[in-house]
Image 1 (cartoon, rainbow, N blue to C red):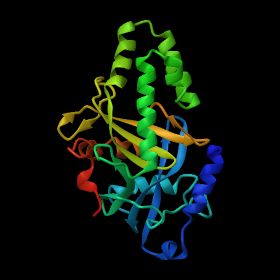
Image 2 (cartoon, rainbow, N blue to C red; image 1 turned 120 degrees about the horizontal axis):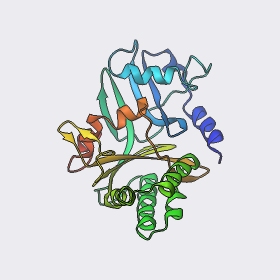
Image 3 (cartoon, one colour; image 1 turned 180 degrees about the vertical axis):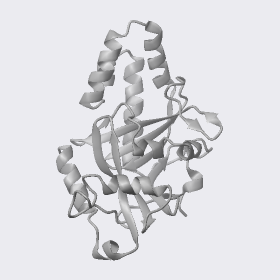
Length: 253
């Protein structure tokens, strides 16, 4: 299914109910914008109106997007009862709610989470075997062209080795299932450029985005410093990924 059609279906599935539209607490989708992909996700912000505090940037990004009320006469809302949201985080006067999977658990509850882990491990195996064309084939077209071009033209063999070593050293620890976007947290990052900072300084955590397009998962590639990045690559999320059981302090009971 083309991404555009998928997004239209997703928007319809999270259209506001009359009750939500009239209430003083709204639940809106977080908008993903990175690596040339823009989409409403099934990770959501619940916030009282008027919106003040840290959640305002998230709300305003949705409000001004193609799925918000300034550009869309039927803006997209989330219905918290539509999905089994199993994680939540206080965010200013509101809450972020999302579906997540701890990869340290004995069993996976989310089918999408298992697919992301399997794809990441497949990509690692292809890279370890030297099958670069197979590895890059799992990227979106834009990301594939960028990374292949860099690798093919880079003359410093040390940088190429660092690129490969960093990917092979990572292990998946947690994923946020925010269809059509999946936010994968890994540990073991060896390259300081991509290692994220927690409250105690640089960590070994990296965030990798995947998008489901035409029924297949693809790696998005570069992170572009969007509002979405500021949340999921921020200190609070990095600290949660560093927990012995990642994000366990945010698990809903």
